[in-house]
Each structure stands twice: as C-alpha cells, then as structure tokens.
Amino acid sequence: MYLEDIESHLQGARVNESGRGWIRSPVGGGLIGVFAGGLTIFLLEGVGHGLLGTADPADASSITVPMFASVLMAWILGSAVAGAVATYWARTTGLKLGVIVGLTLLAGAVSTMIAIPHPLWMSAAAVVLMPMAAVLAARATATR
Image (cartoon, rainbow, N blue to C red):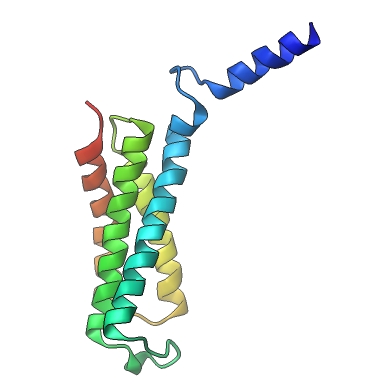
C-alpha cells in the first residue's frame, strides 16, 4: 500500500493539469528560454570580441562604438532567442512568457550597464529593443 501511494504521488508531480510535465510548463519554458538566450549572448559577445578585440572595462575611452554595437546586437538577438525558445518549449499561445524572459535578460544587461559605463544610446536601445525582440519572437513562435 505504501509503495502505491508513492507511485501515485510521483505521477501527480510529473504531470500538471494540462497533461504536460512541469518541464513543458511556462516555468520550465522560461528557465530553458533564459538559459538559451544567455548562451546566445555569451557566444555572440565572444565572436564580437574575437573580431573587434577587447578593451579595458575600467577605461571607458578604450571601448569603441563597434564594440558597444556588437554587444548590443548580442543582447537583442539573445533576447529574441529567449522569447522564441521559451514560447516554443512551453507551447504557449500568449506573449506573457516572452515579456518575462525579455525582462529577465534586460535585468542582466542593466546590471552590466551599471558595472561598466555604457553610452546613453546603447542603454536606451537595450531598454527598448530587448523586450521588443523577445515579444516579437514569442509572437512568431506562439502555438495557435
């Protein structure tokens, strides 16, 4: 009897009310999406640094506009990947998950902007374009 209770409890833990496991829930999709977006940002920033070189973060004058632009593009594309992956993974129809993962990655970008001085144009573009990219990607991949 005891083993049957454990088995029924485990079965209930694996499947939510929609008949999907927790990993396919919006929470699981959000975690996978943020991870995919962060990995994309990491890889694209690495490519940018490889092509354009690196600068001393303590000396803001050593960072060129193309370096800032490549980081901004990595942030925007990473945010789009996060929105698309999260929405696709969770098989959701709404855009809320795209907004959440876009804002989560934006929080990481803001912490970087606080730690390392960034130009105003880059900060403003990141605040507008990162959530927008995540939402547009979520809209493109939302299940109908």
